[in-house]
Image (spheres, rainbow, N blue to C red):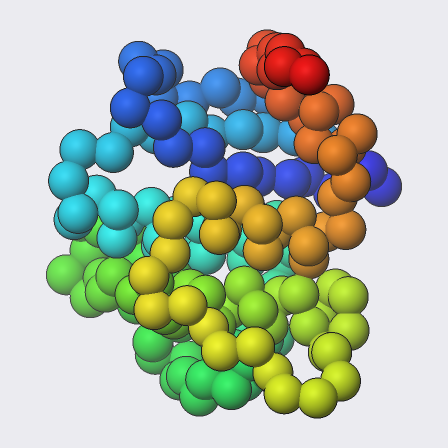
Amino acid sequence: MNGVKIYFAVITPFSDQSLINSINPNINIYLRQIKNQAHQNMINNDILRKIRYTFEFSDTKMIELFGSAGLSVTRTQISNWLKKDDDPAYQYISDFQLASFLTGLINEKRGKSEGLQPVPENKLNNNIIFRKIRIALNLKDENILEILELAGVILANMN
């Protein structure tokens, strides 16, 4: 995986673990339990924060990523989204804004597709977030299974 840390926010109501850390020096998988809609907003911010620091994106680069998906944001917005939720200046990032960022990440990592840019989703769920990260990082089924196996998650083939 070329020495890049990969973070996945795996959200499950069945997990009593809050964090699996350092499964591998290159992969950290975070498990969080969703309790209410306000917590979901925090998770959006966590995803943005983890992607930013994983790829060491500057504020300028973050603004470019949002812009490549058609969303204009300011350095102040980025700063407030990256703050911890107990900071008075903290602002949650909406599903639409995070979807725009993830589309920009796809554009950065895979190249912008020709023609019309996909419209960012107004409502995100775990599957959409995972799909966008998978596309951006060009992860194949085998890569995903390896990552899940490192986290101790075994998937059975039901064929």
